[in-house]
Amino acid sequence: MNWSIIQNHLINISFAFLLITLLIYWSNITLTNFQLFSKLGTLFTILINLCLSTTLLIRWINNGYFPLSNLYESLIFLTWSLTFVHLILEKQNNSKLIGAINTPISLFIIAFTSFALPLEMKEASPLVPALRSNWLMMHVSIMMLSYAILISGSLLSILFLIIHKTNAYEINRNLNNKFIHYNNDMNNVKNHHSYLLFNRLDILQSIDNLSYRIIGLGFPLLTIGIIAGAVWANEAWGSYWSWDPKETWALITWLIFAAYLHSRLSQSWKGEKPAILASIGFIVVWICYLGVNFLGKGLHSYGWVS
Image (cartoon, one colour):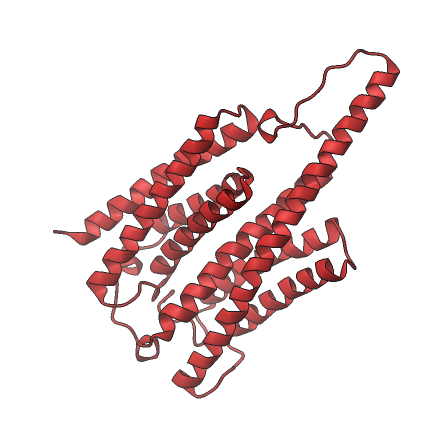
């Protein structure tokens, strides 16, 4: 049995399901509020997660180590983490916004994995000595999971800014808010604008609070992941911290989200300013995860690009 072909089929199925899921969630937000659409979106996300889980499990069994040793495997695991986080957050918050903003990112990652990476980068290779450790699974998996959660929270902050900056804001039926039709007299026009403003502020506050709770969940995982990486680095190279590009950007990521959480807890900043900070964090997470690896420098450059 050719397991590589099976893995490719599973990734292709995941890509197709992600495309369908994207259409479902966006249709559910912009066009209709059918309960069936909501259930279909969740069902397809579960199927995507199962396909990715099977792919990772096959590589784990065949190669004898947890599949997080190269860019291809880490991208698959990141997509798995995004779909897993999506399902958990959607169940807890009963909000379809999570799927609407997470699915495009997952779709882009799988598309990049399938079509942009060369075939040799998809093949498993023997681990370098530094990676032959139980810390591989603990450190990298926690970091990737924290990235997925922080990306989800940051995307909500970006959505907050978009809505906040949009002058013509339409409240859709799928958010359980409907336009009320009024007569043309001035008094009713004023009531109409007051109603829209109230609902707009209510939605903004809900998105802002949800973003805060999600980032508050991802930040401790990022902290644990960095500490685990420091301990592993000391075992592998005899130093807890060497200012490697990946380490430096992980610290920058930590500081940005620490500043965001501090501003929310102290209430020194409210509304737009913390959202801008979290949006910057979204960019920094991607620089930390992908950007520094393309430099080809530092202790974290192996297994990514050559």
